[in-house]
Amino acid sequence: MNTKDKTLHKFGGTLRKIGSIVQRDTLKVKTTEVTAAQIKAFLSTVGLENVGLADRKYYVTDWATWLDIIEDDQTNTYKYISDKTDCDNFADHFNAVVAMIYGLNTSGRFSVQLVDPTTGNHIGYHRASLIIYMEDGELGAYCYDAMENMFDSSVKVGEGDVVMKNWKYIATYLSFN
Image 1 (spheres, one colour):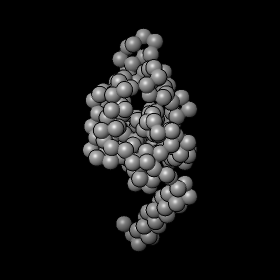
Image 2 (cartoon, rainbow, N blue to C red):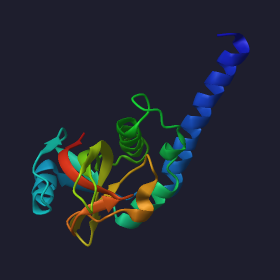
Image 3 (tube, rainbow, N blue to C red):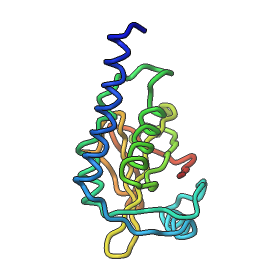
Image 4 (cartoon, one colour):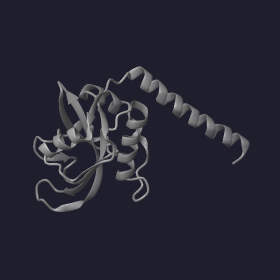
């Protein structure tokens, strides 16, 4: 890499770091600590039993704060390239960014089978994010798909089928760390 490109590369990294600090410091996310056992118990009430929880403590915030985070999320600006930068990369990126910037480790990898919601025909496999939040002391969850910025059609988990973009999401595995 020539000197000019190396300088610009370093500058880009510095901008990303400063942007993350500005986002964190201006949003001032308030969190509540919950245990892995609380998360697991909640998820079982909405039919999600196959769950990996790598940490003992998890940090949740309210849904309004998650909406602010999602509104400014840049994950969906990356180009989709099959088998290179696809659904798992988009979901993992969003989950890592919210953990690193805001200290929220309650956006997990939501691995699903996709089926046509009308016919039930298999479409494929996919990964999105499952966001756990807290309102009035109660845990709740939404499915968020950063790849398609499909939040406008998100579904609250536990209130029927999770259907977005004419895809029905059937959980196969969920993990948080």
